[in-house]
Image (cartoon, rainbow, N blue to C red; front, side):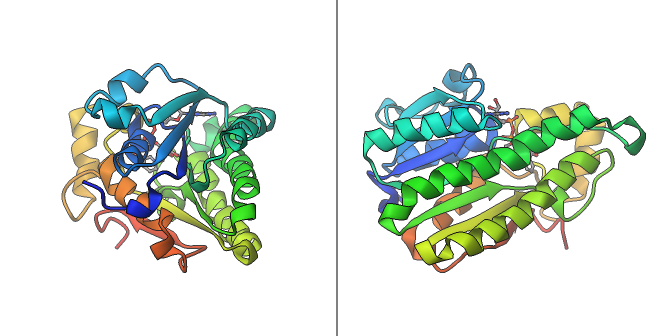
Length: 253
Ligand SMILES: NC(=O)c1ccc[n+]([C@@H]2O[C@H](COP(=O)([O-])OP(=O)(O)OC[C@H]3O[C@@H](n4cnc5c(N)ncnc54)[C@H](O)[C@@H]3O)[C@@H](O)[C@H]2O)c1
């Protein structure tokens, strides 16, 4: 069902959309008639992630191999998108990695790895998106943060720090791009049913304990995030900018 007709025939870019939350956003955008470009390091999961999507909607999605932490790679991909000529309405910086390490286990390499993808990747993406949106004086950039940015979890010092820094980047870029009528917001999910969650909570006991901390009694689903992303991506949300929107089943209360 088409819920966001304003996105129809516009370009929607989702980084890290080969699977998980990004695939949920990309699929919903295609269902709403958008031309979708998924930028991912690894497009091998794509067939599995999009298997349930009708072919007519799947045809709207193109997978482009791109490392968001590599500025040249992102810029090169953006030039290719510019040549397509379709107006970019929404760019979602969703690609992210997680690391589990306590204070004594952290080293400089881990720090750079996670900041390069979760923070710099979103900054490079925003820069590329802004260049494509400016001529139209419209558009929406969304950064996928995490509830961990606000509520520390054991072993997630670097991950939470990268997402907290992304919160500042979101507000800062929102202010910079407001004169161009480009909005920039962040969505902060609680634990969401994806491969990343399964890796973080591999056994039934740890999953159960994590779920017990969510008052609404279930994990977040990619569709919960996708609905918010597409709403913010529509012109009807064009007065919302610089916000961090928690989608957490009440876990932050
Ligand atoms: N799953 C959760 O519980 C949860 C909770 C809060 C926030 N998040 C955030 O949501 C986003 C998506 O998470 P997910 O659970 O869908 O993860 P996922 O691991 O299932 O998918 C992440 C995707 O990003 C891609 N990716 C990783 N590094 C990349 C890079 N350098 N360049 C391009 N693509 C890259 C991967 O190949 C993968 O397809 C992440 O930013 C994550 O931090 C997830």
